[in-house]
Length: 239
Image (cartoon, rainbow, N blue to C red):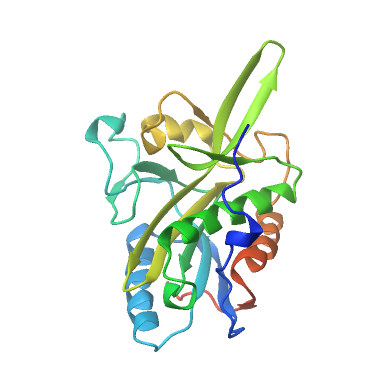
């Protein structure tokens, strides 16, 4: 049975001041290094009280990223796509078209200064968004990300549908989550995703849910507000 990461009693991630988080969506593929540079600058501005919190939704061109816990042996095909060394937590992951990346720049000073609760909130957010499509998902002890159970005649397995990798600086978060809507799942074959070789990777479309990216965004926005509080539409970074 997949676990539920965050009970309502534990969820103290909504600040009491009611200030909305900026919610921005990029309509084109965003280069990874430019996205990271924007996050670095925005996090510094949030920490200094000079900018508001932001969630930035985007897609990247096909690439691999290596988190701080990545192992070189988990890069199986180094020549397939560009590899970016990242300061986020976690190991190797793939980003590409059809995958919704959400970079989450939140001020945890306003949200309890509890990194574990923050990560549980990210998990809850993804699980609730998937529930809007009738997909039952959860987390597993010792495995990062959000998982679905798949069953057939005489078989069952667990596949990852969303990854989580974050960093916190001066109690402001960045990097975030990636939800597989309709990426090319074969591209995950160039790495051992998140260092877990014994399980697979799936997507909404792979599960038979023919959701568009706009529909996925709407589900993510609604579920985010339930966990982290109100959002307001903002312009995407000009990158």
